[in-house]
Each structure stands twice: as C-alpha cells, then as structure tokens.
Image 1 (cartoon, rainbow, N blue to C red):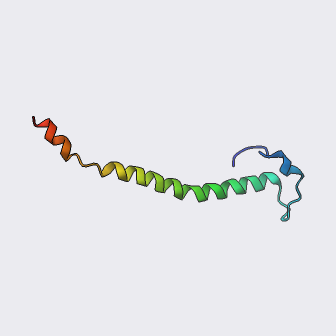
Image 2 (cartoon, rainbow, N blue to C red):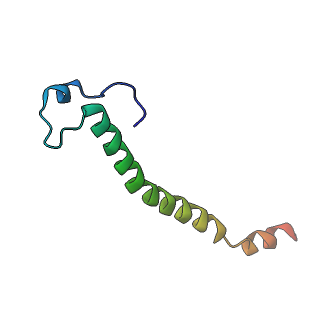
Image 3 (cartoon, rainbow, N blue to C red):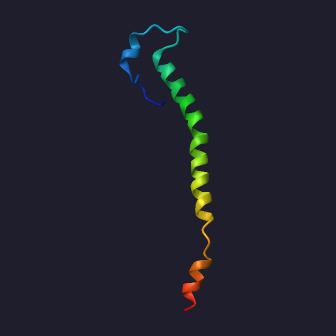
Length: 66
C-alpha cells in the first residue's frame, strides 16, 4: 500500500477500464484489503485475550497450601 513503485510490473501494460494509473490502483487495493482484514485480526486478538482470562486459578491454590 505504501510502495513507491508498482509491485507487479506486468500490470503496467494492462489497459484499465477506469483510466486510473496502476500505482493508484495498487494503493486502493491495499487499502481495501487492510480495511477488510482489520476486523478479522481484532476478533482473533479478542479471542486470544478472552481465552487467557478464563483460566481458573483455583486449582493452583490447592497445591500452594500444602
């Protein structure tokens, strides 16, 4: 999304239907993929952090009293 050059050079020769430069098309595509991927990543982090909070420390107390 932030590259100064087109990542796939074979797209430089392709005629675009909307007359936008390949570099701008690449940046828009990167932005769309980033926006679409962030919610998936946030759900994954939420699930990982939520599962670590569900650990019950009560069984450990039984061994510490002895």
